Image 1: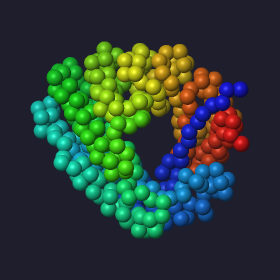
Image 2: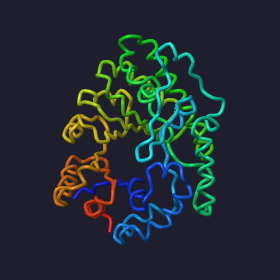
Image 3: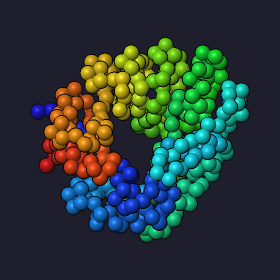
Image 4: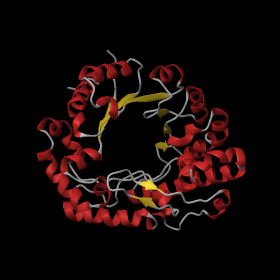
Amino acid sequence: MRKQDYTFYVLYTVVAEACGLHLRDIFLEPEKIAAAYRRLPEVLSPRLWAAVGDRFAVPSLQATSYDHLSALGVEVDFPLDGEPKPRRLLKGPEDVGKLQDPERFLECGLMPERRRLWARLREAWGGEGLSPLPPGYGCEGPVTSAVLLAGQDFLLWPYDCPEAAHRLLEFCTRSAHAFQREYFAELGTHFPVKVSWILDDFAGLFPPDLFQEFVVPYWNLWYELAGCERRCIHTELLRPEHLPLLAECKIDHFDPGVDQYLSPRDMAERCPCAFQLRIPGWHVRRRPKEQVLAEYRELAAYQPARIEFGMYCLEEEENFLALLGLARKMAGEG
């Protein structure tokens, strides 16, 4: 039987729920985070702790993907019990020329506060096992960055003002690379890198003809700047007609996330590169365990490079642990 690779995660929402925290606390309250991580062995069930406790060996300050945009001037709100939300920065195409990189990304926007919070977390925890800089990716792909900067109006720019659209996309690409160079250097990693990921969920909002002009060149530019050996992409909202265009970017690995428009069969028959498949949280929750396990086996039949699944809330524990057991078995572990 073919071994099936997998990856899993336990989302920070589980930590918040188990320890009675608000979601905002996981981003902004280091002392509460440290206390919560100390309590996890007691508040999680013995079975769950035995299965995933190693993932919580040291506390983590939850990161956002908006560190780069915030350094450009984007304000980010942290709702009490919701995901962080960036505010639109540009009023229109005429504002693109006002964008400029700061002299030091890590001294602008969210990063100074994140570093102060990280220092407090190190102090509250004792510092053991924690890096000097808060971990996280910190930036979005070119199209997603452009949409967050200019709002949904940006999706009309290719029709109404294509030159401004190209200027903004090139700025976002080069600026994100500059942010990563500075951020990675602080972590001890320097360019070129072996593997480069682009996270660009909104790219699929462009139909294939516009995708060819307004997405492909900037993904290619991103990878060229990274000088990477392996090109990986996470993007959602693609249609089957988009898949051949991945070859034009020489993509090595494609993560469609929970794309509603691509079926596993579409991926197996039309994707020009290695791909992964995912079981979303709402498929794990409130479904008979046998159905969840059957879905995993069905996805494995399409021979993805890996299958990803996670745990979003305590209610999912039984099905999540069953999935994890099956995944380990099909991977030839134990």
